[in-house]
Length: 383
Ligand SMILES: Cc1cc2nc3c(=O)[nH]c(=O)nc-3n(C[C@H](O)[C@H](O)[C@H](O)COP(=O)(O)OP(=O)(O)OC[C@H]3O[C@@H](n4cnc5c(N)ncnc54)[C@H](O)[C@@H]3O)c2cc1C
Image (cartoon, rainbow, N blue to C red; front, top):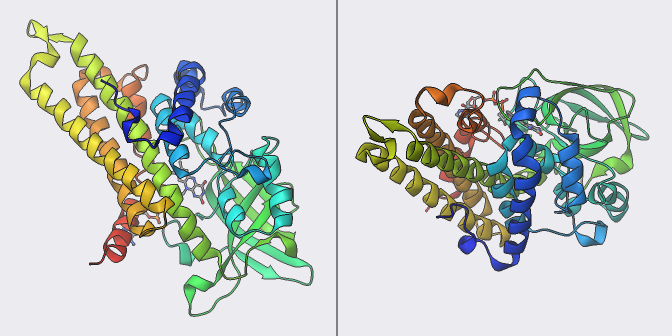
């Protein structure tokens, strides 16, 4: 039986899902372990993804992309993350944050900055989190002070995907200090070769090792006025809107990982023998597999329903947070059970389940820790 079957996927996304699957099989799966071990940036796979037309293509056709919608990106995510989450994250981060410019930027900005990313000549990233603050988006401390010619940025960002590798970033910075803490932030385009921009990789991670995050220091880093995206003070709201889309995709990260965990566990117990029979013959084991499958299907149904809701902008905040929370926690749960079913072999690096087990710990945190999601689910799902 097919876990990531396409009956739940809208028709317009099915062909692309198949392409993503074939790409993942040919280019991601065979090198996943190698990149996990080395922790290197998967330049070759990224290039192959670009050649296959599967990277940064959420950017609209008007600016050189293919205009993949949310459901198409979700379909790609499931397939890529099933093959390997670290490489998948690198492929998907190449245009991370571009949606903000697409939605709120000027024509000139889109022509200048989006087109090279869509045409795979440049990669970008989104810098929001800071060393001391991640969850409290209205508590970030990096400032952007207005000057005669533009804005001068000072402060630090942490965890930023592609901070070292990217050509430019969308940066979230404080432009005011009013009592309305949600109106104090703005979004800026910051080319990474701007004087005063310094970035280095953060220490090695235990999971998603083939993706790279960085620590940025802005030291009087000046950008021209035309690099402000949208209106000053609108940053928090732009981000909230952006995260509604992002959380559906992060749900997809975890659905791919959960599918991998179930497949690995299923295969293992049907081959492994104990007490003179296959481990899969013990009813207790069958029940674990049954539970894993039920949880997976429930999460997947919610995630795809939420994708449609967010695409149609119907209570998007609620649905996005609910899908992200359910899918990411399901992945943690099934990976844990998958580990148990692998016995001692679960802890050997060469077994994919051990990689999946480490990777599933990450989506419960990024794009907003699940405690924050629960706040949103309660508040935005009020009856
Ligand atoms: C692999 C990876 C990639 C990332 N990529 C990016 C990126 O590209 N760009 C970017 O800007 N950021 C990125 N992040 C950062 C990520 O978004 C933050 O780690 C996340 O938002 C949590 O922030 P924090 O780590 O500072 O945790 P904190 O805010 O310090 O929170 C720590 C913990 O405290 C608890 N907590 C906090 N607030 C509350 C509350 N209100 N109620 C209950 N409990 C609470 C939660 O358990 C939470 O996990 C990435 C992170 C990882 C791990």
